Amino acid sequence: MPTTTSSAGTGGQPRFRLATESDWPLIWPFWQHIVAAGDTYCYDQATGYDAGRRMWFGSPPDQVWLVTEGDPASDPAGAESDTVLGTYRVGPNKAGPGSHIGTASYMVSAAARGKGIGRAMVLHCLEQARAAGYRGIQFNAVAASNVYAVKLYLDLGFEVIGTVPGGFRHPEQGFVGLLIMYRQL
Amino acid sequence: MPTTTSSAGTGGQPRFRLATESDWPLIWPFWQHIVAAGDTYCYDQATGYDAGRRMWFGSPPDQVWLVTEGDPASDPAGAESDTVLGTYRVGPNKAGPGSHIGTASYMVSAAARGKGIGRAMVLHCLEQARAAGYRGIQFNAVAASNVYAVKLYLDLGFEVIGTVPGGFRHPEQGFVGLLIMYRQL
Image (tube, rainbow over all chains, first blue to last red):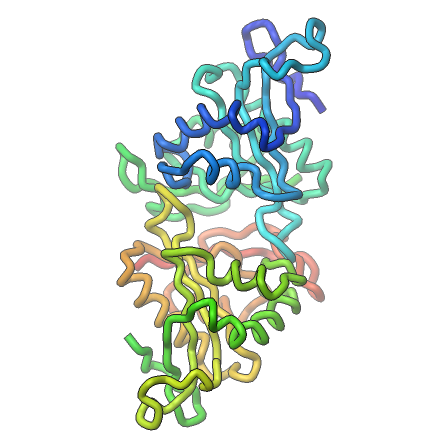
Protein backbone atom coordinates (compact mmCIF):
# COMPACT_ATOMS: atom_id res chain seq x y z
CA MET A 1 0.00 0.00 0.00
CA PRO A 2 1.72 3.19 -1.16
CA THR A 3 1.22 5.82 1.54
CA THR A 4 -0.57 8.85 0.21
CA THR A 5 -1.28 10.59 3.49
CA SER A 6 1.84 12.70 3.36
CA SER A 7 3.60 14.62 0.66
CA ALA A 8 7.31 15.22 0.49
CA GLY A 9 6.37 18.85 -0.08
CA THR A 10 8.60 19.22 -3.05
CA GLY A 11 6.29 18.06 -5.79
CA GLY A 12 6.51 14.27 -5.58
CA GLN A 13 4.76 11.81 -3.32
CA PRO A 14 6.99 9.58 -1.20
CA ARG A 15 7.25 6.18 -2.82
CA PHE A 16 7.99 3.00 -0.96
CA ARG A 17 9.90 0.00 -2.18
CA LEU A 18 11.40 -3.04 -0.47
CA ALA A 19 15.16 -2.71 -0.13
CA THR A 20 17.81 -5.35 -0.54
CA GLU A 21 21.33 -5.31 0.86
CA SER A 22 22.48 -3.93 -2.49
CA ASP A 23 20.69 -0.70 -1.53
CA TRP A 24 22.92 -0.19 1.49
CA PRO A 25 25.11 2.44 -0.28
CA LEU A 26 21.96 4.60 -0.60
CA ILE A 27 21.13 4.21 3.09
CA TRP A 28 24.54 4.24 4.75
CA PRO A 29 25.32 8.01 4.46
CA PHE A 30 22.35 9.19 6.53
CA TRP A 31 22.15 5.98 8.61
CA GLN A 32 25.76 6.46 9.71
CA HIS A 33 25.19 10.16 10.40
CA ILE A 34 22.25 9.37 12.68
CA VAL A 35 24.02 6.53 14.51
CA ALA A 36 27.27 8.46 14.99
CA ALA A 37 25.38 11.37 16.57
CA GLY A 38 24.39 9.01 19.40
CA ASP A 39 21.36 11.06 20.38
CA THR A 40 18.51 8.80 19.22
CA TYR A 41 19.56 5.18 18.64
CA CYS A 42 20.96 2.58 21.04
CA TYR A 43 23.51 1.47 18.47
CA ASP A 44 27.27 1.61 18.84
CA GLN A 45 28.14 5.05 17.45
CA ALA A 46 31.23 3.58 15.74
CA THR A 47 29.28 0.89 13.87
CA GLY A 48 31.01 0.23 10.55
CA TYR A 49 29.64 -0.16 7.05
CA ASP A 50 29.29 -3.95 6.99
CA ALA A 51 28.16 -4.36 10.59
CA GLY A 52 25.56 -1.66 10.03
CA ARG A 53 24.20 -3.40 6.95
CA ARG A 54 23.89 -6.70 8.85
CA MET A 55 22.11 -4.98 11.75
CA TRP A 56 19.68 -3.02 9.60
CA PHE A 57 18.77 -5.88 7.26
CA GLY A 58 18.73 -8.63 9.89
CA SER A 59 17.31 -11.85 8.50
CA PRO A 60 13.92 -12.99 7.17
CA PRO A 61 11.14 -12.24 7.95
CA ASP A 62 12.66 -8.83 8.70
CA GLN A 63 11.98 -6.32 5.93
CA VAL A 64 13.75 -3.09 5.05
CA TRP A 65 11.89 -0.42 3.11
CA LEU A 66 13.14 2.64 1.28
CA VAL A 67 11.26 5.88 0.76
CA THR A 68 12.17 7.74 -2.34
CA GLU A 69 10.84 10.85 -3.94
CA GLY A 70 9.93 10.66 -7.56
CA ASP A 71 7.23 11.11 -10.08
CA PRO A 72 5.84 7.73 -11.11
CA ALA A 73 4.40 9.27 -14.28
CA SER A 74 7.80 10.23 -15.63
CA ASP A 75 9.56 7.20 -14.19
CA PRO A 76 7.16 4.29 -13.84
CA ALA A 77 9.91 1.77 -13.14
CA GLY A 78 11.34 3.68 -10.18
CA ALA A 79 14.80 4.87 -11.04
CA GLU A 80 17.60 3.83 -8.74
CA SER A 81 18.83 7.40 -8.85
CA ASP A 82 15.77 8.71 -7.01
CA THR A 83 16.63 10.58 -3.86
CA VAL A 84 16.31 8.36 -0.80
CA LEU A 85 14.38 10.22 1.90
CA GLY A 86 14.34 7.56 4.56
CA THR A 87 14.35 3.90 5.46
CA TYR A 88 12.67 1.66 7.97
CA ARG A 89 12.93 -1.92 9.16
CA VAL A 90 10.16 -4.13 10.52
CA GLY A 91 10.29 -7.66 11.90
CA PRO A 92 9.40 -9.79 14.91
CA ASN A 93 10.42 -8.23 18.22
CA LYS A 94 11.11 -11.62 19.78
CA ALA A 95 11.28 -15.20 18.53
CA GLY A 96 9.13 -18.22 19.35
CA PRO A 97 6.27 -17.43 21.74
CA GLY A 98 6.92 -13.70 21.28
CA SER A 99 7.07 -13.58 17.50
CA HIS A 100 3.51 -12.31 17.02
CA ILE A 101 4.58 -8.84 18.20
CA GLY A 102 6.56 -6.81 15.70
CA THR A 103 9.09 -4.06 16.12
CA ALA A 104 10.32 -1.35 13.79
CA SER A 105 12.94 1.37 13.43
CA TYR A 106 12.86 4.46 11.24
CA MET A 107 15.48 6.83 9.88
CA VAL A 108 14.88 10.01 7.90
CA SER A 109 17.66 11.60 5.89
CA ALA A 110 18.69 14.96 7.37
CA ALA A 111 17.91 16.60 4.02
CA ALA A 112 14.34 15.27 4.10
CA ARG A 113 13.33 16.29 7.64
CA GLY A 114 10.20 18.30 8.26
CA LYS A 115 8.41 16.85 5.23
CA GLY A 116 6.30 14.22 6.96
CA ILE A 117 8.52 11.35 5.86
CA GLY A 118 8.67 9.87 9.36
CA ARG A 119 4.89 9.90 9.65
CA ALA A 120 4.51 8.38 6.18
CA MET A 121 6.94 5.60 7.11
CA VAL A 122 5.17 4.74 10.38
CA LEU A 123 1.81 4.60 8.61
CA HIS A 124 3.23 2.43 5.83
CA CYS A 125 4.90 0.20 8.41
CA LEU A 126 1.66 -0.29 10.34
CA GLU A 127 -0.02 -1.52 7.15
CA GLN A 128 2.85 -3.88 6.39
CA ALA A 129 2.87 -5.22 9.94
CA ARG A 130 -0.91 -5.74 9.89
CA ALA A 131 -0.64 -7.58 6.58
CA ALA A 132 2.14 -9.76 7.96
CA GLY A 133 -0.12 -10.80 10.83
CA TYR A 134 1.54 -9.08 13.77
CA ARG A 135 -0.83 -8.37 16.66
CA GLY A 136 1.02 -5.29 17.81
CA ILE A 137 4.16 -3.21 17.34
CA GLN A 138 6.57 -2.60 20.19
CA PHE A 139 9.33 -0.02 20.27
CA ASN A 140 11.92 -1.14 22.80
CA ALA A 141 14.06 1.94 23.09
CA VAL A 142 12.76 5.43 22.35
CA ALA A 143 14.90 8.09 24.02
CA ALA A 144 12.62 10.41 26.00
CA SER A 145 14.74 13.28 24.67
CA ASN A 146 13.65 12.42 21.12
CA VAL A 147 10.53 14.51 21.55
CA TYR A 148 9.73 14.63 17.86
CA ALA A 149 9.59 10.84 17.60
CA VAL A 150 7.67 10.42 20.87
CA LYS A 151 5.04 12.93 19.75
CA LEU A 152 4.74 11.29 16.34
CA TYR A 153 4.27 7.82 17.83
CA LEU A 154 1.69 9.08 20.34
CA ASP A 155 -0.16 10.82 17.48
CA LEU A 156 -0.25 7.54 15.60
CA GLY A 157 -1.77 5.52 18.42
CA PHE A 158 1.24 4.23 20.30
CA GLU A 159 1.36 4.52 24.06
CA VAL A 160 4.23 4.49 26.52
CA ILE A 161 3.92 1.17 28.34
CA GLY A 162 7.10 1.54 30.38
CA THR A 163 10.18 3.65 31.03
CA VAL A 164 13.68 2.49 31.89
CA PRO A 165 14.90 5.20 34.26
CA GLY A 166 18.06 6.79 32.89
CA GLY A 167 18.16 4.11 30.22
CA PHE A 168 19.56 6.41 27.53
CA ARG A 169 22.84 8.34 27.83
CA HIS A 170 22.30 11.46 25.76
CA PRO A 171 25.50 13.21 24.64
CA GLU A 172 24.33 16.61 25.94
CA GLN A 173 21.43 15.90 28.29
CA GLY A 174 23.02 13.00 30.18
CA PHE A 175 20.89 10.12 31.40
CA VAL A 176 17.29 10.37 30.22
CA GLY A 177 14.47 7.84 30.27
CA LEU A 178 14.24 5.14 27.64
CA LEU A 179 10.63 4.60 26.65
CA ILE A 180 8.98 1.35 25.65
CA MET A 181 6.04 2.09 23.38
CA TYR A 182 3.33 -0.17 22.02
CA ARG A 183 0.42 -0.11 19.63
CA GLN A 184 -2.08 -2.88 19.05
CA LEU A 185 -2.83 -3.72 15.41
CA MET B 1 31.95 -13.50 44.81
CA PRO B 2 30.73 -17.06 45.35
CA THR B 3 27.12 -16.89 46.42
CA THR B 4 26.64 -18.43 49.82
CA THR B 5 23.10 -17.32 50.50
CA SER B 6 21.57 -20.46 49.13
CA SER B 7 22.38 -24.12 49.39
CA ALA B 8 21.69 -26.73 46.79
CA GLY B 9 20.14 -28.68 49.62
CA THR B 10 22.03 -31.83 48.82
CA GLY B 11 25.18 -31.23 50.79
CA GLY B 12 27.22 -28.96 48.53
CA GLN B 13 27.05 -25.24 48.04
CA PRO B 14 26.37 -24.09 44.50
CA ARG B 15 29.62 -23.04 42.88
CA PHE B 16 29.92 -20.54 40.07
CA ARG B 17 32.40 -20.49 37.26
CA LEU B 18 32.62 -18.61 33.97
CA ALA B 19 31.66 -20.84 31.06
CA THR B 20 33.19 -21.01 27.62
CA GLU B 21 31.60 -22.35 24.45
CA SER B 22 33.33 -25.67 25.16
CA ASP B 23 30.89 -26.06 28.09
CA TRP B 24 27.89 -26.05 25.78
CA PRO B 25 27.48 -29.87 25.90
CA LEU B 26 26.87 -29.52 29.66
CA ILE B 27 24.26 -26.81 29.16
CA TRP B 28 22.48 -27.94 26.02
CA PRO B 29 20.40 -30.82 27.47
CA PHE B 30 18.42 -28.68 29.94
CA TRP B 31 18.67 -25.52 27.84
CA GLN B 32 17.06 -27.31 24.91
CA HIS B 33 14.42 -28.85 27.16
CA ILE B 34 13.42 -25.44 28.51
CA VAL B 35 13.40 -23.76 25.08
CA ALA B 36 11.45 -26.57 23.38
CA ALA B 37 8.72 -26.38 26.05
CA GLY B 38 7.97 -22.85 24.82
CA ASP B 39 6.39 -21.78 28.11
CA THR B 40 9.01 -19.38 29.45
CA TYR B 41 11.45 -18.10 26.83
CA CYS B 42 10.86 -16.05 23.69
CA TYR B 43 13.24 -18.25 21.72
CA ASP B 44 12.39 -20.34 18.68
CA GLN B 45 11.37 -23.69 20.20
CA ALA B 46 13.20 -25.51 17.39
CA THR B 47 16.53 -23.75 18.00
CA GLY B 48 19.35 -26.15 17.15
CA TYR B 49 22.54 -26.99 18.95
CA ASP B 50 24.87 -24.52 17.21
CA ALA B 51 22.37 -21.67 16.94
CA GLY B 52 21.57 -22.11 20.63
CA ARG B 53 25.23 -21.90 21.58
CA ARG B 54 25.67 -18.71 19.57
CA MET B 55 22.57 -17.16 21.15
CA TRP B 56 23.47 -18.07 24.71
CA PHE B 57 27.13 -17.05 24.53
CA GLY B 58 26.64 -13.94 22.41
CA SER B 59 29.81 -11.90 22.14
CA PRO B 60 31.97 -9.93 24.60
CA PRO B 61 31.29 -8.33 27.02
CA ASP B 62 28.49 -10.91 27.43
CA GLN B 63 29.34 -13.53 30.05
CA VAL B 64 27.91 -17.00 30.62
CA TRP B 65 28.14 -18.58 34.06
CA LEU B 66 27.66 -22.15 35.18
CA VAL B 67 26.42 -23.28 38.56
CA THR B 68 27.70 -26.64 39.67
CA GLU B 69 27.31 -28.58 42.83
CA GLY B 70 30.46 -29.88 44.40
CA ASP B 71 32.60 -29.89 47.47
CA PRO B 72 35.55 -27.54 47.03
CA ALA B 73 37.44 -29.36 49.85
CA SER B 74 37.52 -32.60 47.95
CA ASP B 75 37.88 -31.01 44.56
CA PRO B 76 39.60 -27.64 44.81
CA ALA B 77 40.15 -27.34 41.07
CA GLY B 78 36.47 -27.77 40.17
CA ALA B 79 36.04 -30.99 38.27
CA GLU B 80 34.46 -30.79 34.83
CA SER B 81 32.31 -33.74 35.80
CA ASP B 82 30.44 -31.80 38.49
CA THR B 83 26.70 -31.78 38.00
CA VAL B 84 25.58 -28.59 36.26
CA LEU B 85 22.57 -27.15 38.09
CA GLY B 86 22.01 -24.07 36.00
CA THR B 87 23.44 -21.36 33.77
CA TYR B 88 22.93 -17.67 33.28
CA ARG B 89 24.06 -15.02 30.82
CA VAL B 90 24.61 -11.33 31.48
CA GLY B 91 25.55 -8.52 29.12
CA PRO B 92 24.50 -5.09 27.90
CA ASN B 93 20.82 -4.84 27.05
CA LYS B 94 21.46 -2.35 24.26
CA ALA B 95 24.52 -0.96 22.54
CA GLY B 96 25.92 2.57 22.40
CA PRO B 97 23.92 5.07 24.50
CA GLY B 98 22.01 2.17 26.11
CA SER B 99 24.95 -0.02 27.04
CA HIS B 100 25.06 1.02 30.71
CA ILE B 101 21.94 -1.07 31.41
CA GLY B 102 22.50 -4.81 31.57
CA THR B 103 20.22 -7.74 30.90
CA ALA B 104 20.35 -11.35 32.00
CA SER B 105 18.71 -14.74 31.45
CA TYR B 106 18.66 -17.73 33.77
CA MET B 107 18.04 -21.43 33.28
CA VAL B 108 17.82 -24.07 35.99
CA SER B 109 18.15 -27.75 35.16
CA ALA B 110 14.86 -29.59 35.76
CA ALA B 111 16.68 -31.94 38.16
CA ALA B 112 17.86 -28.99 40.27
CA ARG B 113 14.57 -27.12 40.68
CA GLY B 114 13.30 -26.17 44.11
CA LYS B 115 16.80 -25.87 45.56
CA GLY B 116 17.25 -22.13 45.38
CA ILE B 117 19.50 -22.26 42.34
CA GLY B 118 17.54 -19.57 40.51
CA ARG B 119 17.78 -17.23 43.49
CA ALA B 120 21.49 -17.94 43.89
CA MET B 121 22.06 -17.18 40.19
CA VAL B 122 20.19 -13.87 40.28
CA LEU B 123 22.13 -12.76 43.37
CA HIS B 124 25.42 -13.77 41.79
CA CYS B 125 24.45 -12.01 38.58
CA LEU B 126 23.61 -8.78 40.40
CA GLU B 127 27.10 -8.77 41.92
CA GLN B 128 28.71 -9.43 38.55
CA ALA B 129 26.66 -6.71 36.89
CA ARG B 130 27.49 -4.22 39.63
CA ALA B 131 31.18 -5.05 39.31
CA ALA B 132 30.99 -4.60 35.55
CA GLY B 133 29.61 -1.10 36.05
CA TYR B 134 26.02 -1.53 34.87
CA ARG B 135 23.61 0.98 36.40
CA GLY B 136 20.64 -1.36 36.25
CA ILE B 137 19.40 -4.71 35.00
CA GLN B 138 16.44 -4.95 32.63
CA PHE B 139 14.49 -8.10 31.79
CA ASN B 140 12.81 -7.57 28.44
CA ALA B 141 10.48 -10.54 28.32
CA VAL B 142 9.21 -12.28 31.43
CA ALA B 143 6.04 -14.26 30.70
CA ALA B 144 3.40 -13.27 33.25
CA SER B 145 2.51 -16.97 33.45
CA ASN B 146 6.00 -17.71 34.78
CA VAL B 147 4.82 -16.92 38.31
CA TYR B 148 7.82 -18.52 39.99
CA ALA B 149 10.26 -16.27 38.13
CA VAL B 150 8.14 -13.15 38.57
CA LYS B 151 7.90 -13.72 42.33
CA LEU B 152 11.63 -14.38 42.59
CA TYR B 153 12.53 -11.21 40.69
CA LEU B 154 10.12 -9.11 42.77
CA ASP B 155 11.64 -10.62 45.94
CA LEU B 156 15.08 -9.58 44.75
CA GLY B 157 14.20 -5.95 44.15
CA PHE B 158 13.05 -5.92 40.54
CA GLU B 159 9.86 -4.16 39.61
CA VAL B 160 7.53 -4.50 36.65
CA ILE B 161 8.05 -1.31 34.64
CA GLY B 162 5.80 -2.32 31.77
CA THR B 163 3.65 -5.03 30.25
CA VAL B 164 3.18 -5.90 26.60
CA PRO B 165 -0.47 -6.99 26.45
CA GLY B 166 -0.70 -10.54 25.14
CA GLY B 167 3.00 -10.41 24.31
CA PHE B 168 3.61 -14.07 25.16
CA ARG B 169 1.83 -16.97 23.46
CA HIS B 170 1.74 -19.67 26.13
CA PRO B 171 1.19 -23.21 24.80
CA GLU B 172 -1.69 -23.90 27.24
CA GLN B 173 -2.79 -20.51 28.55
CA GLY B 174 -2.80 -18.67 25.23
CA PHE B 175 -1.82 -15.01 25.05
CA VAL B 176 -0.56 -13.70 28.37
CA GLY B 177 1.25 -10.48 29.27
CA LEU B 178 4.97 -10.13 28.68
CA LEU B 179 6.53 -8.22 31.55
CA ILE B 180 9.45 -5.83 31.39
CA MET B 181 11.21 -5.78 34.75
CA TYR B 182 13.97 -3.55 36.05
CA ARG B 183 16.23 -3.18 39.05
CA GLN B 184 18.63 -0.35 39.72
CA LEU B 185 22.14 -1.36 40.82
